[in-house]
Amino acid sequence: MIAPAILPARGAGDRLTGLFWRRPAVLVALLILPPLLWLGVIYLGALAALLLQSFYAIDEFSGIVVPEFTLKTYAELLRAQNLDIILRTALMAAAVTLASAVLAFPIAYYAARYARGGWKAAFYLGVMLPLWSSYLVKVYAWKLILAKEGILGWAASATGTGFLIDGLLAIPGFEGSSLSTSPFGTFLVFTYVWLPYMILPMQAALERVPASMLEASADLGATRAQTFRTVVLPLALPGVIAGSIFTFSLTLGDYIIPQIVGNSANFIGMAVYQLQGTAGNIPLAAAFAVVPIVIMLAYLWLAKKAGAFDAL
Amino acid sequence: MRSDRGPLSLRLAAIGGLLFLHLPILLIFLYAFTTEEKSYQFPPPGLTTKWFGVALWERPDIWPPLLLSLKVAAISTALALILGTLAAAAMSRARFFGRDQVTLLILLPIALPGVITGMSLRSAFGILDIPFSTWTIVLGHATFCIVIVYNNAVARLRRLSGGILEASADLGANGFQTFRHVLLPNMGSALLAGGMLAFALSFDEVIVTTFTAGQQSTLPIWMLNELVRPRQRPVTNVVAVVVFCATFVPILAAFYLTRGGSETAGSGK
Image (cartoon, rainbow over the protein chains, first blue to last red):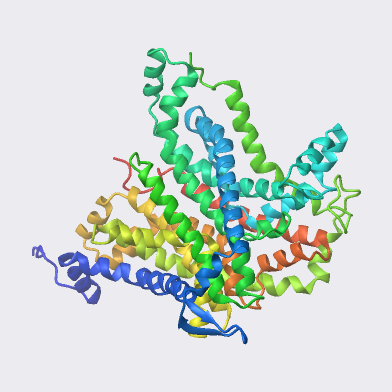
């Protein structure tokens, strides 16, 4: 006896499979629904709550949050001391982004162009491990390095270069009793912690630059510097921008690093944390948290205008 | 004119950059053995292993945060594995209206700074009058762990040939049997890798957690408190070494699980 070509359904599983086959959209909807609900309700809901809170009023005498619409909280953001915090954070983010780009380039370029086989894997792991390893431990390691009695101070006094550190700490804006209490220390640690986030997209962009293009540039008589400036750099730019989005945004929001290393000058993240915690001023904390979102949106818009995404 | 190893200056700068990324972490290991308790003196005046014993036996305040961290990381990873895999399966299957927006929504929790995620959740808990608990921490952690699992699962699904799913259907398997006997074994290592990375990320997270934990203390929060107000510095160093290893091992394992693609069925044509 010959079995029929179409077997009868053997149960609910078969019937559902048939339904999914006839209507693939049902399956996709069923699959996407749980994650979409989670992210939509919890994440977007929370972001909406953040916006809502930032428009709430606070009773000046009792300090209790009143759910009434007001723009006073945002007006408070424009006070000199709060503008100071925003400006300081944005400047730090810009400095960290620049330094990361400069430090990341040789690593990304070497890994993309020259590293082969085992070295390629070593470079990949060499960037991935610091990126993923414990954030707090990394910050802590720098506390040990930058402390007055730590390894940097020891190395400086052993080699008689202590005046370099003293000179650095004497520069206006970098003042501190040691590197671990100087804004320069904050900058160093920020750069260290976010550097891998710059290397990876940069390397990805550089890997897409065809070697034949560099050879063509050399054949046409360009020097190494000219090739770099007119061929490599423009083609690497999307990667640099992508990396800078990470370094810039991560620095804007961080509050652990300036709390542990530096002169405890306020940053946006620290302001948010203190306002929601000890001060209990959730509306102002929420308004402060909206600032990085606005800055990042402006940043993305500018990057788009500059054509940074065209090559992606 | 181009040598295969690149100009010397470039090589030096690249290797210097990698050393800059790795040397600071090694220092933590040295300091876990120092005899100096009050400062970060270098070189350490003497070496001892007694702090491991002190951390183990004389500091009961370490254990509740450690247990809470493990619990939160386990629950968040489980949730992220389910939600991330579902999202990856849906996204790899079809192009549909709003697909790019959904991708953005999945990426957003790690693209925006942690302070925003943390403060947003804190605002929502405030408005809805939700008291802090283990679950408020889990809500935040699972949200940013989804994308880790999603990325790993999507990368594997992209490499997986659609042919083996069709072959399974041709041989009479229904969707659930195909999932159980074909899809899952092929996705296993990618999901394991994503799960381990998510676990490491959750175990180590501090920024979002400080907003969603209230008075509770996870291990990173315990460490943060010790950093701000040090008690026995070498004990903190010991915990730092343990935390580092607890995140380092899953990362290394995840790397080896996802490297190459030759073990994926149906990829050899």
